[in-house]
Amino acid sequence: MQIMAREPIVMQQIIARCCEIKAAVVMDDERETSGRRALLNYGHTYGHAIEMLTGYSKILHGEAVAIGMGCAGRLAVELGMWPAETATRVQDLLMILGLPTVLPKIPHDKMLATMQMDKKRADSVVQLVLPTQLGAAKLVPWPGDDAITASFVSPAKSKPSK
Image (tube, one colour):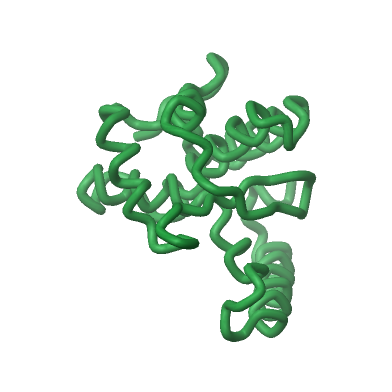
């Protein structure tokens, strides 16, 4: 697989396309008024908490976001917004790409408290970016600590993070 081999031409094409997509989203919501730009934060609410709670040294930003994407996917499944098969497909792809998919050993209460300090808020309620289909997501208000905590538990076949 060319992606796994990190072939320069393929990586250049992927990065260029990602930049185009991001630029289009930012241009669509330059002043962050419609909520569309917040969608670029898929996996970040979890990821930023992971980074903070591991001292910004054990897990790279992209790795933390990958773990967060898995958590957000599980939460979206739990809330009936996304099919479990699609969440599994994304989780498997992250693993194939060598990214961690399991939340590190962090006390759940600390993870919840740190996530609630996230900057993406609406009327003091944390807004999570949850997937609805491949290539689409929506902002969802904090669904409660129990639902969030359930999203921390990864499928058994996932490999542990660093």
